[in-house]
Every structure is written in structure tokens, then in C-alpha cells.
Amino acid sequence: MVWRVSALSVALTLAAAAQQQVDPKPPPDDDVTAYLKERRAPALRQLALSNLVDAANASLAKGNYADAEEIYHKLMLNYPESPLGVVNLARLYLSQNRRDDFERILVDESTRPFVFPGLYQLIDMATDIKEYDLALAVLTSKLRAKPDAGDLYVHVAAVYRAKGDVGSAVAALRKAAEVTSGFEEANLLLARTLLETGLTREAAAVFQATMQVDPNDAAAVLRRISELLWGSRANVPMIDAFAALAPKFLPQDASVTDGLGWTYYLKDRPALAAALFEKAVTASPGVSAYHYHWGLAAIRTGNRERARGEFQAALACQPTQEERRQIEAMAAAAERTSEMKKQ
Image (cartoon, rainbow, N blue to C red; front, side, top):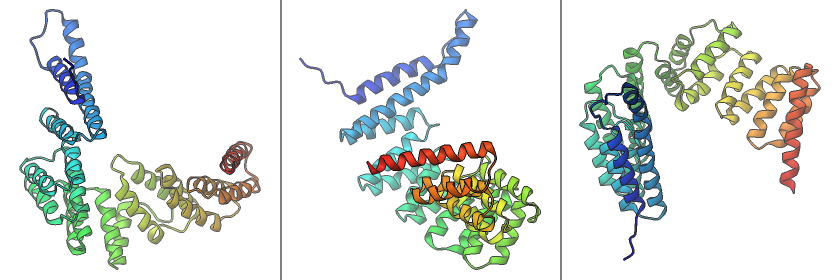
């Protein structure tokens, strides 16, 4: 008799074994042994979770969608602290055009009295398929339990914005800023939305209140940009909002422009960075660092001819010996890559 062992059965067996090891048991007499077991428990639990995720991926690769669905249900049951089960199950349903099942997940999850892991990913999915009212209903149910949750209002605003209801989006962002003092993301998104609706003066006031620095103090502006875009709350919408606001409300100082560009470059937004480095070079063509930075961004965007020209310009600006070494090394690397592509 030939036994066929599926990825699902192997993963479930491993998960069950790991679950048994992390279940609380009476502590042994040996305190050291108890301490070690306690320290190992989170790692074992994570291992079991990883095994299930790997099994689900293997099932999907083979087209065994039923097995994957079963695994995701098990993840939701046994690992409620992880978003992997519910988010991947939702994606599976949408990939199979099972919108009713997807909506059922959102309706079921809306009954929970707390913001569960993966909520915002589900809201984004609902928004992408234009289920705006369902997404808003789920967020509203969460706000009843957590009326002071700024993040919830920010996502309410995002849904309204996608729906085309700018007025409601502005109201939600104002509420987010109100309930969470110093909530920079809400303020920046509010300023961008106001700017897009033509309320430039109001947008400027919100932006300047968020910056909280003298706009004529370039060093202070650069420090604040770093705080905002490298803080723990910095995310893609926040960075995009800042990119829309900066040309309107930041001082036209080459060092500020270059500093903002460098922030975008490090945040893997080379196109945004290149546009700012170009402005910095135009304003101060004799600064080697600005040319060098533009060259780096040009490489990342695939414009190697521009990169070569900017590196040459940087070398012509009499950089320091250390700067010259960096520029020459990067220029040589770009040249080698260009030659390899030609071959």
C-alpha cells in the first residue's frame, strides 16, 4: 500500500507537535529547565506558524486551493494574533472571484470589539474592489469601540478619498488630528487633501503647524523632515503627502531640497529624489554633492547617461579627497554595469 503524504498533513502534524510544546504545563522541579522551556515557547510557536504558511504556499503552487484554504482557517483559529490567516484567506477568495466569501470575512471580523491584525489590509482590499460602503461599515464598527483611534479615522478618510467624497475625507482627517495630539500622518494627509481641493491657505496652515519650525532656518527644516519621514509612524501615504506639499510650502533652499531628495532616495523613492536633486543642482550648480546625489538617483531610475554626466560634473566641482574617491568609485561601477548590459 502506498501512502500519499500531503504538505497539509505534514504541516498540521508539525503545528500540532509545536502547539503541544508551547501549551502551559505544570513547571518541573528543575527551575533552569522551566526557564529554558519558557524561553523556547515563542520560537516554537513561530516555527509552527512558519510551517503552516510554507504548507499553504506549497499547496497554492500545486493548485490545491482547498488545502490552502483549510490551512488559512487553521491559522486564524490557532494564531489569532497573526494577520497571515485572515489576510491570505481574503486574497485567496478574491483571486477566485468569491466576493461573497470575502465580504463574509469582513462582516465577521467587524463583530470583534478591537482592531485585529490585518484589518487595514482587508480594508485596502475592499477599497480596491470598490466595496466602499462595506469598508466604511467595518471601520465605523471599530470606531464605536475605539472612538479615539486616530489610525481608524485615517483609514476612513482614505476610503472616502477613493470614493470621491473629499468633504468626508477632510472631516475624518480633522477628527484624527483632534483625537490624537501630534498625529503627523493625519495632519500631512489633511494638508494634502486641502491642497488638492484648492484650499491652499488652509493647507499651508496645517502644514506649517505640523513642521513646527522656522521655515527660514534650513537646518531646522532638515531636522524636522528627518523626524517626520524617518519616525516610527512614517509610511508610504505619509511620504507621498509630504512630497505633494513640499514644493508648495518648503523654503526654496538648495540644501533643504537636496536633503529632502536624499530622504526619498533612502526611502527607495528614486524618481521623487531625482526630481529634487535636479532642482538642487539648478539652484547651486557648483556643489559636488548635489550632482553626486542626482547621479545616484539616476542609476536607480535606469538613466545611466544622466548618472555619468552628473558624476563628471561632481568631479569638476572640486570635491574633497574623500568625496572624490566615492564619486570615482560609483562612476566606475556605473560604467562597468553599462558595459555589461551592452554585451
